[in-house]
Length: 386
Image 1 (cartoon, rainbow, N blue to C red):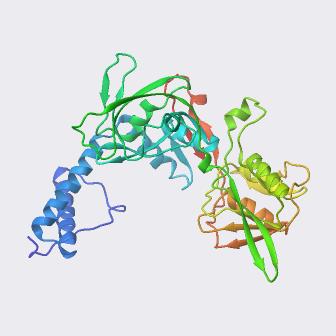
Image 2 (cartoon, rainbow, N blue to C red):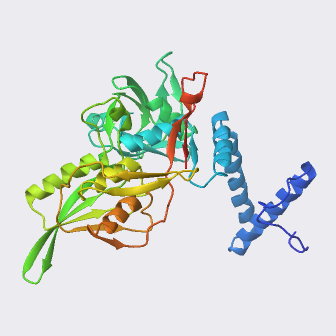
């Protein structure tokens, strides 16, 4: 009934907690009335609006009921940590694994990117060079409806599952096997799916690594070759580094090799494209800067006790001394801003583009397993603290 006067407060952040169920029901009733009215004002009939809300609330209830204990802990710990500052974060074990993958640009699995479509696990694409790519049968648009339990050899139905839980089952150690029940793109679920067994391997995320192109620029009667190096993030396989492996992947090493190749081909100028680069490892920002300056301080950090640490160029000399430009936009942040700022401060090159994000803090990573007396197979995750 929209003929009576009523009041609903959208922002409840500053409101007191409700004392009883009656107050909660009153708030909920106000929300339902408001949601219904907004849909009607958008042009729907009251009957259509009720159907839309019914579906919306059903999805909400299903999402809440799908929460696991780990999800609740994650929400609570992040709410607590972010009272300290907006950039501190708690990563649960799976998120910590994802962060490690982003830094190392590799993981052990089959090499398929997934998303959810109407409760079904959908193949978005297949990573070139991965086990799924080499096998050739798994295609974008295919649906994974089941995964074979290797212990009891029974098929686990994963329709309606949380995507993260499906990913946990598909990933595994290099050399091990996983069997998927796959419904091909365009087929109905009641049509016969097939079983696909793949051997897991190391998957390289080449599309997230530094890359380059050469663009030709015509000015008057002369053609200039401009090398453009695109850096999506400042990454480093720090676990391989700690194992003291001689060759491990990192932004600075990849860019060093790229610039060497560009100089062999012959370029007249170099552009470092940091648009959309939200940052990454500070050590890689300083190492990358060292490729372009001979020596000197790059950035200084001040901790909570006002102690200042100066981080110098870790590389003696520079590998490229030619004309240089750094491209940035409003999404360039953190390590990107440190690199661009150092290049500008040393008058080593020009910075072009939009004003950057403006992140002036640095975070340290603390794996929580180190601080626990208890052991857990899945681990306790990690904290990134400012």
